[in-house]
Length: 557
Image (cartoon, rainbow, N blue to C red; front, side, top):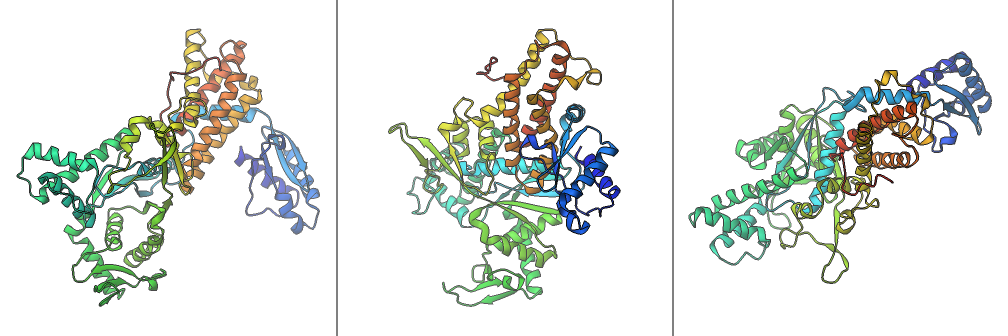
């Protein structure tokens, strides 16, 4: 309808003898009383036409009215010259038919067809279970992958295992201490999981394991636990990439060699800490300061150096765009990585880095009854894992809670709130809408109400504003999906879902379906089917189930 109106508007502007602007847009008014679409083109053209904006608007409106636009009821000229288009309900009846025809694919398009995108998210050191705060990246990353795929992209989800470096050495020392019954190192990992892993390995292998094998087997157990928690929340990674491989294959050394050949490194002997450091001349590449790449004496490379090798490898695997999701505390590293990648590959802006805020987890202390923040720290052993949260909170509720806010805002995850089974819980409220749709279908079948084929159904009986509101929202879903994909913003679909659920609940309370007059009943039955398609598709993007029933479903509203 938007495209049809724009085409008609361009034709009318030309017919009125006015210059047709290159950019022409329609907006959806905030208030329904102002129409279905609005355009401010008369204000844009007034100066060029040397006429008052309202006169320009009247000329355009006259041409549109004379030409006749399908589904257009009338045009209102508001204020200084805004064109407000009021459409007949028939345009929304066409939307219903489009939703049903589109089915599972409704809302998707092929704008990113042919793009191969690598999306890296959640990646963490395999030194302990995935903490609850990391679950936000689980939900957001998986939903972004779904959004990109909905626009036709070939998306690969990747988990980067930081399985080298000091933190792995600390895990090795911690496991060895627990395995041999020695005191932990002062900076060792205190969590109970370290002792549990050590005890399990001793039970399986006796005391024959050296520290290297002990760490290898311990990391494998930790990774298996992470995989299990991810499976519980419905996330699958296509690739688990080991940082250690980069060193073993010589990829890191290759990157250093390329940068040296380009004259982009220098060695500073005796820095403030007395070390000899090889640096990247990142200031020459637009960064705010030069960045360390390697300790000359030990040969140890920095995160940046390893990341350059890692992202170069992704491009060599055939991906044409890279996206990383990082915590906001890594903001200062974005420019250096992109600058280094440009030096290595000639590509600008790779990888695209999305920065997110962290999660504050709250719960009620059973001893005091007070609500307090739960701290997370692997090393102190007081962290709350994703598995701990999933033991108490449904996976769908967990995912949806993490997706309701933009990732660049700090999120408060209150266990007492999200476990509440009430309509005040936004996740319950949304899923209840789908369960109600399913209940209507079941009751219709029980009552013997069978809707004829849609092409033979008279949809003109759908005129109630509750019916039209859900159809308006369904019409806006493809645009919302494309916008969310472009902005990498799954919370926009979460907001759409919440608004749509509210509109459906209002329809459910105001409009009878099964016991309405037969022509209305069959039209409304098809309307609920369209609602089911739209809501299920959107929940699928978010990775949240669309339940057929809920234990506390109140059929009487």
